[in-house]
Amino acid sequence: MSPRKIRSPQAGAPPLPTLHPHAAGIDIGAREIYVAVPPGSCPRPVRAFPTFTADLLALREWLRECGVTTVAMESTGVYWIPLFQLLEAAGIEVCLVNARHCQNLPGRKTDVQDCQWLQHLHAVGLLRGSFRPAGQVCAVRAILRHRDALVRGASRCVSHLHKSLTQMNVQLHHVISDLTGVTGLAILEAILAGERDPQKLAALKDHRIKASREVIAKSLQGDWRPEHLFTLRQTYALWRQHQTLIAECDAQIEQMLRGFDARADGPPAAAAKTSHRKPQRNEPQFDARTECHRVLGVDLTAVPGFAAPTVLTLVGELGPEFAAKFPTAKHFGSWLGLCPDNRITGGKIYRVKTRDVKSRVAEALRLAAQSLWQAKNYFGDLYRRWKARLGSPKAITAMAHKLARILWHLLKFKEPFNPEVFAQAEEKLKRKQLARLQTLAANLNYQLVPNP
Image (cartoon, rainbow, N blue to C red):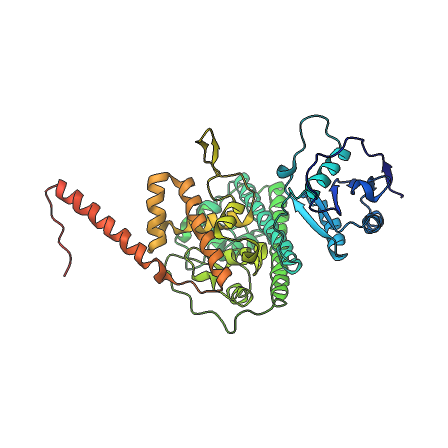
């Protein structure tokens, strides 16, 4: 299909200095793509192309004929990815911009005007490209995001298993903590195999289950209706299929990580033992800690709050060389939306709320910050102090911002995490706590006496 040609409007561009004379603007759509090139490079500088691969190749050749060396496009859903990859492979610089940063003026809004507006903004140097990791990192990111979707699907299957059991008044999931554990799976498979005797089912109990065999047998007396058994069987098969696909994703991720250049020799140092930390059920089924240490050159699991799944998410979303894209840690925190977004007018700050940024990295950092609420170290004390003063949401954001700055520093300078850096701050915090306790004791006519 030949591209449809569109006549350019006669309105001239504002008299601003042109920094990129060979810049083009592209408005991405699901079925049609509008492209605007510099006015003097083609008699009809605006054209529309379908989104078939042959038409994308024709679009690329037309940009080459017009002498375009750089293009700007909005990150619209996932529609921009095929064209982005084709243009990047052809050596054309692609500036992927946030749609909020290039909104048109109020008035008529058309696809033609959008692509021309992008071309004009890019030509005068008013657009900044979004961060996008290298292609090797993007490949790992795609598998990791697919794995997250599978994990969410498996959790929905567990909810449906609970529903089927509840409809039969089988209260097993209220007696044992995890229906997909050793005991739960053994009992489910026996039920689907035709066993209905509560005592025989309760005999499958693992020794680690706190509930007694009598309580489990009592919970397994239900109304075994065939329609609910049918849904239970299909849901259990679907959950098993999810587990198989997750295991395949883990194998693929491990293979892709081995293709990265090694920035560290040998395994990381032994992790500190923590009594409260239990392995997560959805953790990768390979040594993610060692692979991430080899790829990054730094053991991020030494940072309080960073577990192996968190570090794997950071590797897949950022890559080992992301710190070079952000001049300072403040730029990185602003990109994540973890710092205050000050709005100042008339010399007064009227809004300091953080920006609404959808970032998997920020989500992982918030989860890491929230896991510090029981930590017996400086970070745990600091988080609990912020939580008491600011509340949980603001404390989580503040601690996530602190972890983001530490992450940027470690990967920027390739330095291992040194807890002694925070020893001075920790000692200052202890002195403040002691002074507060002494003041409280004096007010109650008591005196603190240290242990010998």
